[in-house]
Length: 401
Length: 194
Image 1: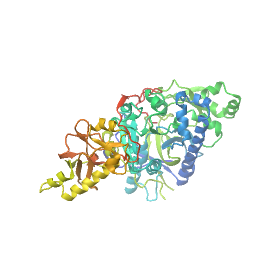
Image 2: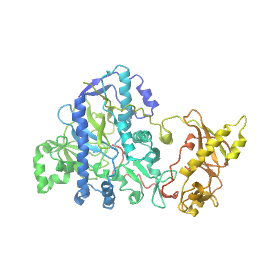
Image 3: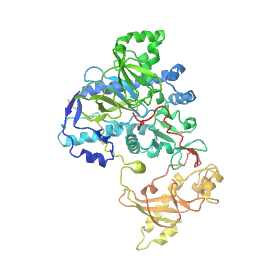
Image 4: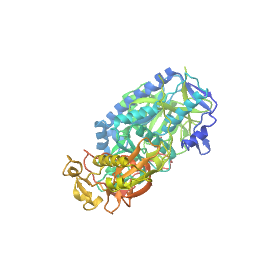
């Protein structure tokens, strides 16, 4: 893994504008940044990122089964009691998942470590699957990249294939996101493209405009019944909204399926560590309350991880996005706190601190995309700070042996 | 063996055009006729369509009618939408269908000239609605007449969801709206992805 300075495509801003990539610059800072790119060997991609990410997804599925069978864990993950049957049913019915994104720390040396799993509402799909792909094709055509170079980016094709496997041709899918968030919308539209390529119907409605019929079915902004709904809106919020009461009876198939409420919850991290302690791609993790009052079994596990945890750990609320409300604790003192504390009221987990590597002043996080149950590509975001927040930059990558 | 998609040239077009993304849509020259005969008799030097077009379009509209007409579980519910006397049983409409599923009667058809498209000629069945206007199986848009020329959005000619063989449905009306989006777990974020 290296970071190389490369000439930018002279016309990339025009291309971004033409394609509607309106947030290539955000808040006066570049978001898309192609002045440099990350370079990997094929073996690194396949053995250090692709295969481990696919395996991690498999471990996560095992962890879902465990949580669904345990009222105690459902309590700790704050899964509302009223919706536990609905969630369990979706798991028992084998409702298939569409996509997700692992955030991995990888420094070119040693195994990648899972920081968290954006298993429910991952964004940056458009820039990963499409704009990054275009960058590679353009740079290869311009001779900046070599003929034998490649990119780990089968994301779009894999999602098309997955959607085609999930739904019969001509099935009408609705897509929704909260209005006024262009980054979220870009991910939704990238999925809409994929749906159309999979010969499915794709309709968009703003989340706030969804209605409920007298029969308790969800309706779009034109009163059409929603049979299948992709929502770029987290399950933990969906389950607490006024319409949550209709979820189980609306006869609406949801994407991601309800059981993803368990995976997108950071409480899954201590569950994974309990089930797969010392797995090379996992970091020690515990519920914060277990740090002071553990059961005997947890105390033993805590003891085995005590050195790593004491050196440093990261406190994350079980619900948190874009780095909000995260703190880093080193040698017993808080040394870094996210500027946004919107999620501070929720219980937290503690994860052993594994610093991100530094490349030319920036710290990259590898986003490993899962389509269905397999890793299909990566997108890298880097931040100056130790907590990757919503103003991080997106960096393209390529493979060269 | 490459590790990237063969193609992934996507564009983000914007919410208003979600269903149309991928190509710039030009309006379609279209004409409505109450029946096949009126189409045939309108053929002349300035008409948009030939007699053969009339026959082909009418046949396509009849096929689409059988496949995609809204289906209801009672005559009363169907007539609420389409007006008294404007519905019939599936058995009457398609031959071999159910006698207890009801659908609107064909009240005309739209014929469109998909300029520059791959499809050439396009057609849709038309139904009278309860307000005396006209509509197509997908609903959404109503027309004052079942006769006359207009420039229509090409999506007018998209095939509506197939209803044949599916449980009959009632087109719903919203009892409430806006019950999603409260975002009760977080606050102050401008985006809900991660």
